[in-house]
Image (tube, rainbow, N blue to C red; front, side, top):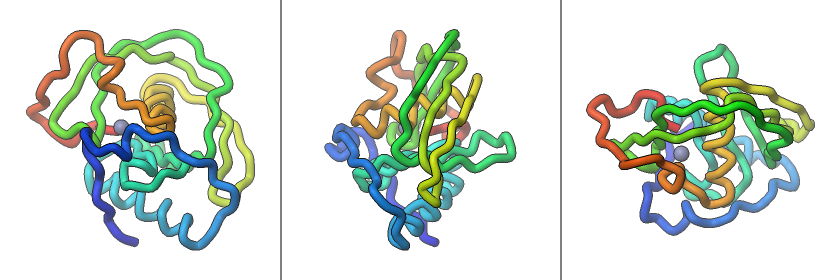
Length: 160
Ligand code: ZN
């Protein structure tokens, strides 16, 4: 495993639409392992492949509910409710902003063995799913911030 460099806002790769994963390869498995390692090292709760410079539709999430989620080619099927709260992003270091997201999300994706599954999440998991899936279409949360982006003193907590 290896820690990869996290791309930051201003890097054009973060604005691009990612490509679907067609098959699992040793290289892609390695990428997923590296994404988890990179995310943990940076104290994040989610990371999308374009954040490490790879334009593939892959997301990893660990919101500390005891599960590591790998979402390949995720499609959001259903959302409901709303939650408004602070959000951060490992690609926007040192900043946070208030974003309203659905409070419930149902997503369909493929796992590391390219088996389809459905994941339902609420609260932080729902927020992380929305945030990470948006990365795959080249969107950053800063476009959704209500009010101003703020500086965070305590960097590295709950960043996605
Ligand atoms: Zn992010």
